[in-house]
Image 1 (tube, one colour):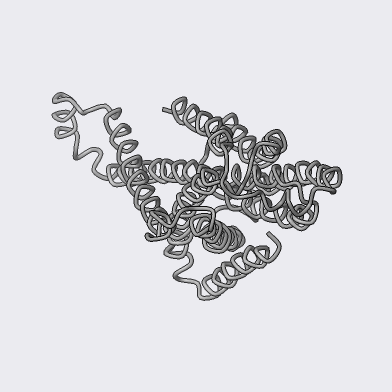
Image 2 (cartoon, rainbow, N blue to C red):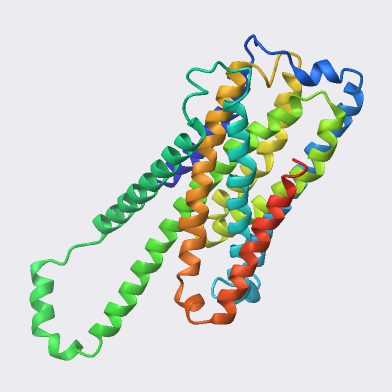
Length: 353
């Protein structure tokens, strides 16, 4: 099962890096960037290399912090600080979907470079985001159900002799049965929670990676130094905050070290590799071509739907309904404030990105 999960993520990562191939066809609209700014290619190239290094560093640090902090007792899963960090990360991911990705998708589908029919007569952005959220929910529930069923099937059934023995010796063990049942139930609950957290982490990474490839290619293909310069800082912070959100989920999922390393590497490298790919195809890539606009619009909409569902249902919903938070007004208020700060921080970055 674990091998299949790892191969699925790796295969998806490789497929997403081939997205630019789908959008390098002839275009009907002139490339605005090339027509307005053709004299700053050298300066733009320098900014791209700065972007690759800074985004790589920020992503690696951001996604690693929650995982490293887990080893410190103060940042344990049952401590208030951990809830505050997760609320902040949930706000970041939610704002990423609503403020960054959905507007980009809407802009792609409403571009004058696309024909009015069918793109202008139907709200594809909202529709695809809704479909993506529904499919994510279905995948989430079916995957969890499958994993739970597989786990129960592995449990050894009690045979008739053992049942008879249990009946004859029931008076001897009557005081120990409740304790054993409680421990067994606790272990089952812990295992199911671990399965859920693993599914959440993997689906969340898929949503983030899809968007990261698109913004990386767009930045790498741009020839305008004026456009790239503000994006370097904005995307660096963007990657750092997104990494914190993903890292918080990974830290709870109890993956093995190899799986954690793989997920960290994939997240950290996606945007820089997208930039490198964009640089390689900058002469033939046109962000205003119909194919580019449609592909970016579709994938951005799907990515937004995934992140909206994951942030509200699997990240914020679970923690805000946790008995520890429900019984502590101080923690509840602090988590709400942390959520607002996370959403505000990522929303503010939209001004430059």
